[in-house]
Image (cartoon, rainbow, N blue to C red; front, side, top):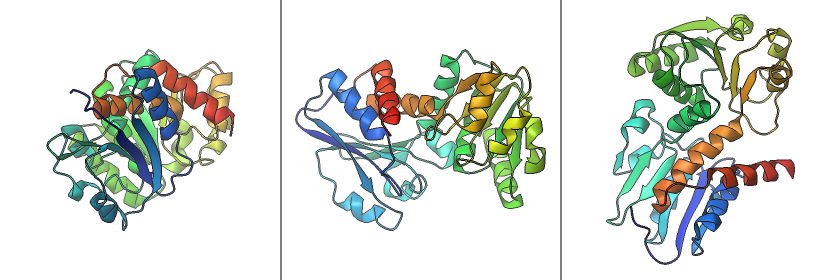
Length: 278
């Protein structure tokens, strides 16, 4: 995809959005790629305001990054979405094409797979997911690509359990639903993916086994989480939410700018510096 000439705009939308590291990552990529006319901003936009925001966008717009609660709300506003995005009914990337079309994709799923592979995790026989929210559905889709066996999902509500069963059937993943009371058992899985909000897994840190395997904790601020710190102290492999954020942002930059490869290392270092300054 060629890069169109002139000043171009991109941004991240969501609510809340002030905490987002996406501007740091994307602006770093533009500087490294020599895209001096490109800008990347953040906008506080909720579901009700999203259609009106789209109406204001002109030809200078190249793309949007979307966080909660917009990943599903944006779909009716698009001309088409990728198979990956359709698999979980969630779009985190919108690209505006030269002919004016709005195309949606989900870079969270391949970004998660890329982050795992960067840490040497190409395939596992089984896995466990802590939590059952929107991020958990993307985690399940990622595991569908690398897990050959059963995925155990530890949920905190029966409603979420039903949702995860639906996603598993749709994605073709063998899933076992377990209660949160048994979440300590999840820590013995070959790969544990924690998708819960900050603080929820702190109590599980006491149950980290002496020889833990791999933990993917999707949080990045605050970091490390109590669980990730204990896991690392015991010698286990830890993949952070920053790893996920950077890898999915790399894919967004490549789609929006048409330049490849995006500068992964520079983007990661910029993200680390920004987090350290908070």
